[in-house]
Structures are given as structure tokens and as C-alpha cells.
Amino acid sequence: MRESRNVKRKKVVGATKRKTPQDRLSVPKGTKDGHYLHFLNDTMDIMDGFPEMRGYFIVMDNAPIHIPKVIDPMIINRGYTPVYLPPYSPELNPIERS
Image 1: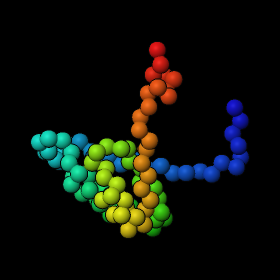
Image 2: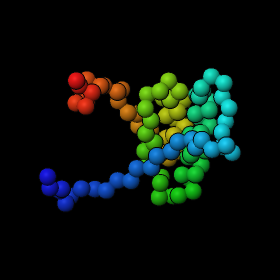
Image 3: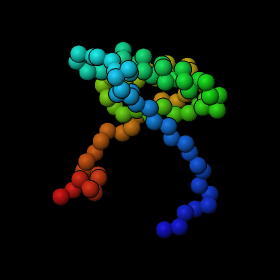
């Protein structure tokens, strides 16, 4: 397979909560939407320190804590673009077929 020479390069940056003793947050019943909003704000605070990141996409899955009506305006107001992954469809993944 030959690569096209007209390919535009894209950077992808991932973020997740580290699980080290000093960063651990005890949450009795899993992650709540408030925890996620705090994490997202902290992440965007870091991104704001890099002007070249303005307009970058923030990609999320469709977890119940990723509430578009709350999160989308917050992300857009900070100068980023929210993007949601499509639902997982194992029937479309050849590796999942027996």
C-alpha cells in the first residue's frame, strides 16, 4: 500500500487521570459528572497555556458522565471543539466475529 503525499498530519493528545498515590482521588461509587467536569476544566487549563492548541478537538466517548448539553458549551467557550465517538459496534469489527 502506498501512502498519498497529500496527507495532512494531525496531532492527537490523550488525557487520563493518573493512578499514583499522590494523585489518587477516593470516589465511593465511581466517577460522577462533577468529577469529570473538574478533570475537563483542569485539562483545558493546561491546554490554554499553549496558544497553538486553540481550536483543537476534545474527543470523548458516549459515557453517561459526558453530558453534551453541559459539556459542549463549556468546551466551545474555551475555544475548543467537542467530538463524540460513535457507539461501539462489535458487529462491524472483523476481529469480534467468530
